[in-house]
Image (cartoon, rainbow, N blue to C red):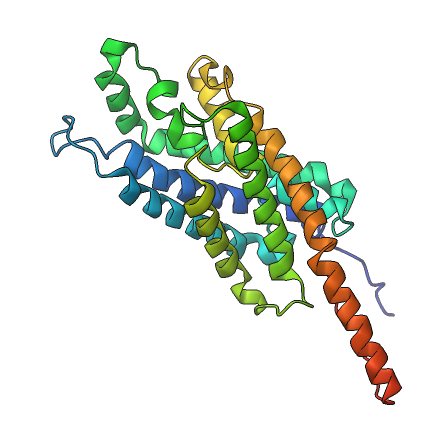
Length: 297
């Protein structure tokens, strides 16, 4: 007698597993990204014995930080890409959802997983670099230094003193619009696609380009989870000080910028590609050739 086939599909094969991948991928992103920032922010002004010294020129620091964030994003995507699509960013998730390329019932679970991954990564980095953080605070004790004032920049973003609210909002909006719009271009199978296993590398280079071009005004969050998750951790360990200013822009501007980037790509380059594919199909039919439907993400 044959035994009945039992469907033993694990819950991890569905949305739960995808959220686990988003959590781990975002945590990897933050560990490498904020870890790179920590090596400069906490050690750049210290001599061999821990005493203050002349810092490295900031331009030299920034290119390494931009490269570090690009590598961080690349590694996060390699970890999660085959499972969840490796959004690792609520702005990316929302951008795909508003264009019908991602299920709306997964948006909040993905965003929650991304935020939690960033929060846990910040907690890990805080304890790894606790000695350096305490040292930085002690050096600034005379001027009332706190974890937020002396090490907050390791974990989350803030604008330069001369960048106003409008400038900061525009910087984050434009940077995220470029991020999401170009991700659409990179993963669009109709648009000279790179091989799938190179997508993470190309997107990593995209992050480097955005950091080099738009990074210094605000620190280029371009990712609400990347900013708010660590900001929330620092708030817990430093009496809420990290939540007293510049909290909403790195959340709202990237979300709106991501939606704008998605629409701009789909209604410009996306429409042109669609029209050219239809024209090519019509030309093939007129020649009596078999027509294959273009691949659409």
